[in-house]
Amino acid sequence: MTTLADALAAEHAAIYAYGPIGARLTAAAVTAARSAEAAHRSRRDALILKLTGEGATPAPAAPAYTLPFPVTDQASALRLAVEIEDRTAAVWRGCLPTTTGTDRATALAGLTDAAVRATRWRRAAALTPATVPYPGRP
Image (cartoon, rainbow, N blue to C red):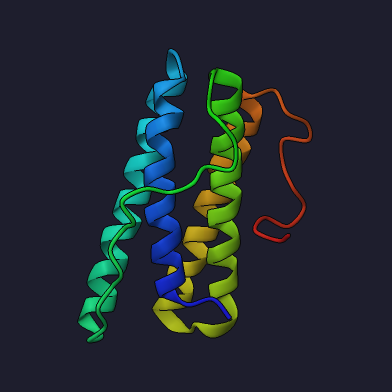
């Protein structure tokens, strides 16, 4: 079962990935990447406040993360953006069975937001299909 601490780790990783992603994008895609990174930062900050408020000590971000493949051009940056959003959606989806109330609403919003961003990145990369039947599902 995935916890909100796992979601925090996924948000840390997503924030890190948008560095190499943004470095290889051009034009409007850069603006979209900045917006996506800001959304992940906002979720990360909210999770840190939530976990701290519950008496937990949230894990800090790792100094670096291993990317699943080299990001060498715009096409690979777009593929990584899709993968990062899909992975983040999967972690948020995993939180749903173990959460209730506002935590469940937070998990559902995290899943939905990541799934929408993944779809937008698929469209930017001209990948088909642009959507998946069950976001966050392996």
